[in-house]
Structure formats: C-alpha cells, structure tokens
Length: 176
Ligand code: NI
Image: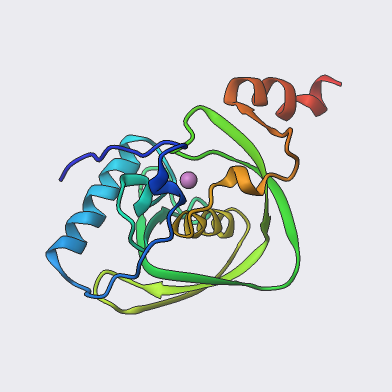
C-alpha cells in the first residue's frame, strides 16, 4: 500500500468529470481503494474521492461518523455512485476538504439523500442517509463532477482559514 499525493485546489484534475469503473474485483481497483484508504487515514479525512489523488474515476471512500465507534475506523468504498435528494430540506454546516488544506467554508447541502453505487465486487449498495453522513456523500460525489465545496458556499464570505473560522465564526454566538 502507499500514501498518494493529494491534488490541491487549482489543479485541473479537480475540475474534471470522472468516468465510470467498468470492471469490478480487479487488482487495480483493489489497490486503488487500499491506497485511497491509507491516504485518507494518513491525512485524517472522513472522505476522499479518486480525483483528489489524480485519478479521474468515479470512486469515493468515506467514513460514517454517525455510526463509527471511536477506536474503530470503518471505511466504505462506493463505486460509480449517484445520489437523489429526499425532500427539499437543506442545511448549512462547516466543511473542509483535503484538497483545500487549512480552510473551511459554510456549505449548503440537502439534509436527506438516497445514494446508490457498487462495492468493490460490483454488488449494489443502496442507502438512505441524513445529516453529516449525507453531507459527506454529497461532498465526495461533487468531486466526481469536478465541483469543490467553494462553489456551494451558503455565503460567499463564509470561507477562510480554519483558525479564523473557529475564532470569528464558530465562536460568534458565545462571544457576543
Ligand atoms: Ni473534498
């Protein structure tokens, strides 16, 4: 396994639409997912999309913070994923991205979604999720369309360095 280099905002690979995986259960696909998993853990991310490691393929991996126990890391790969929104309800929350290191932005996402895709062996995955988990999936699938969260800011001004966001935006309620 190897830790892969992460593409940063400004790199054109992050703006490209990815292509579907055609063959499942292959050594290439397995290695890709192992390497992506190792990379995500090393960078302490909760989701990673293939274009972030310079591969324009419809593959994402994610952790589910809602169900994950603290010591146990459970990574789910999802291949050729799509999602549909369940209802019109949206919510805003702060997001980061390994391709935009050190920054955070307030992003609008749908609250509930249904996502489908395939596991590494081509078995169908079909889930309805909400909250943070739904947010992670929407963020990662956006990557496959060449969309970064900076395009979905709830407020163009609600973006900045993590330290400043924590100090001046997240603590706003408590300091005023
Ligand atoms: Ni990201």
